[in-house]
Length: 221
Image (cartoon, rainbow, N blue to C red; front, top):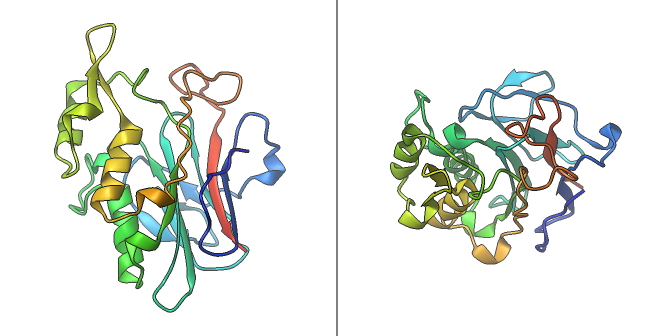
């Protein structure tokens, strides 16, 4: 288990699983992930969405990934109630590509929900987990076009790879969004391992792991 290395705002457990973690240590699936931007309160039954939040103690929530970025958030609401979220951010989710709701990508929507409930983004502890990094994330022009539409876009998030095609820094895009949303860089506990580079530790769909997944998960208490 890989644990974000930042102070926590209240008692909680959180982390990013690896190939070595036993299944019984991981959350129950609560989502049918669809590479969109829906963020819902943690349900008791399986729902179609790509983000969960809860303020309930002892409810472990999480998202499954094999190259996409798992994003974890934890912060107090205005009345001190703890609030946590787990988000699944592929390039579509990160940019809002193809989603009929004009609210932006999944991180923007997750933080918007936190604001509506009375939270201040500056109070959030947050972490992006292991994912495919820019060294291997070769993408088509539609991906770069979608990323460029985000208000936090900067040219350093795109590079040309050895094969002459564009590579996107998806981790970097999400971090730029976090700062644009007012989140504190001192509370960033991201784990920047590349899923393609670490077959010993992590699953990668692009590398051929079509069934294995790691989790980004969080639990109050």
